[in-house]
Length: 205
Image (cartoon, rainbow, N blue to C red; front, side):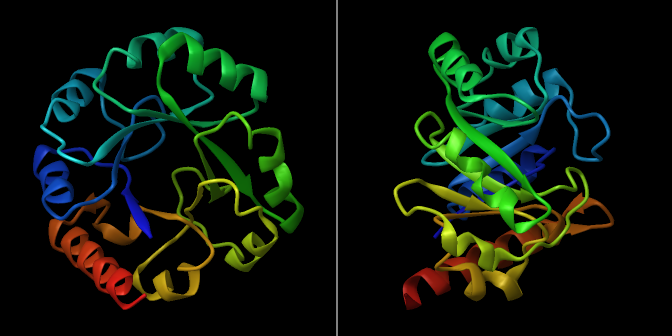
């Protein structure tokens, strides 16, 4: 299982993720309600850190076209988008900006899981997340059992170390943020501990 550490805001946090082989680093770029939001100049600084095998992800809520144009200039690999849009929009921004796309499906009830079908041919990764946006909410990860195995699946929503074993066979990537914070700030020791736990779990499987 791969891992994305989301909501990074300092160079130390990013470097810790890279040093411990996180697969993805996520940056909150246009959602100011989140305490993890960073300004463009900060994003520029953080995404210029030599990333080795880690991929950089711009996390965007209802992004406007001009925002996508602006953020596409950063050294990022993926746009992760939340909001009301269709597959046509995804195809359009993929071809225009040359970035891979993570489509976020927000889950409140079981039938929301199936909203991925609109995007299974155009998204590079599909993320199932809670409806909480900046709030880490749990949902029933077992609903994922109905999803096709032909797509790259990512799960988010109040993920912590204790849940890793449970979700190990439900997704290809785990997306974690709040569990790695102390007083709403990313805690480097928690990041390292989480990544080491996942590494051990991968070795066991």
